[in-house]
Image 1: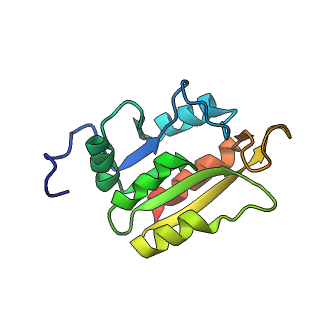
Image 2: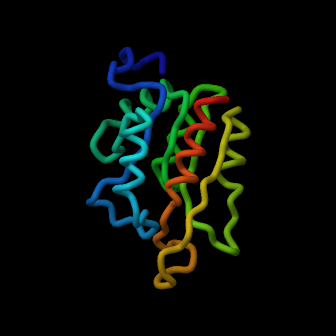
Length: 149
C-alpha cells in the first residue's frame, strides 16, 4: 500500500465488487439488475475487477468501510481491506457447502464478515455452482445493518 499512489477520489466507503456481463461465472445472480439498483440507491460505488487495474482494486478495498460482493475470486480482494471493514458475501445456499473459507480468512484479517444466502434458481449444472437469486428485502435490511453498526 505504501508504494501505491494516493487513492482515487471515486473510491468511497461502500463498494460493490460487481461481475460484468462478460463473466461466464457459473454462480450467476439471476436478479443482478435488481440487486445493483438497490446498491446504487444505497450509495455504493461499483468496482468491476475486470475493468480496473490490480492497484485500483487494492486501493478500493483498502479505502472501503463496507464491501459487498458475490462469492468468487473478486472477494479475495478483502485481504486488502482495513481492520474492522464489514464484508457482505452474496452466495447461494447449498446443503453440503463449506461456508468457512471466507469467514476464516476474514477472522484472521480482523474483518467483520457476513453471508447473505440466496435461493438456487435451478437444479442444472454442478451442485455447488448453480445460479441463484437474493431476496431484495433481506438485502436492504442487511445493507442497513452494515451501515448502522
